[in-house]
Length: 314
Picture 1 (cartoon, rainbow, N blue to C red):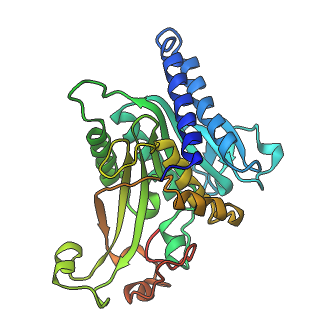
Picture 2: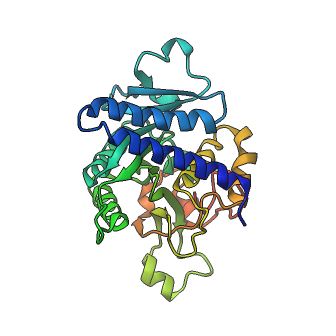
Picture 3: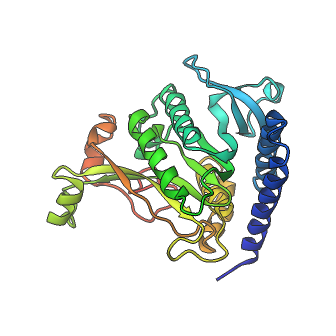
């Protein structure tokens, strides 16, 4: 069923596409300004859709407490506790930030670079311990945003090309599930979001021979980049990659900001994120610290309890 919220999101997507057409007219003669305008489009989207207490700024680098400094990143969503005196310093502290690279026209090289930056940045952060949620997530949201993509030929396969670039970069750069890039959105094509299954244990009652064939004799954790694409099987006509982006961003931020949970639930109920599918990567029990490894392996996890750090999946 279509709701008014779908119309609002479709308008946001239409505005981005109109901006893309306008920006492309001048991109060759002034690529720097074109890039700046594209970044500001995404910053405007976040300012209009996220709660007012976030600070949305453009251009800067992330500084971690280990001393690692990221390459320049395009758009930041800073938490409300972020010191106002530091908002214009262009060197943002990793403790309270969501960060996004922005491209007007996406290429495979952009995907590779974003996955590499995410992995380098997140692996430089202190490891969090004590629950599957903490250990599977770095505490920083990182994504890649684009107005459109470079595969526009009649026989081109943009979804397949992005998937291949994403998984090739993941295999080369991601050494732990927490280092995965969280979101990739191409506004006229699809949104990919990282999902994580805590652990499929061979001790679970439903773990049978078929399970062993898929997940191995010792079980495994899994990560996936679930693709929510325009025109995909079972996808509604009113679906928008922008809706999927906003739905997932609300879901991620609501872990830290409980007041966002009611709207996050609403977005889920009206299926703002749409349907999706994706391949998976398997991980051994060794990804977890000794503090929680045995409990995870025993399958002592919750199911259907929202915002439980011991949930079966995130």
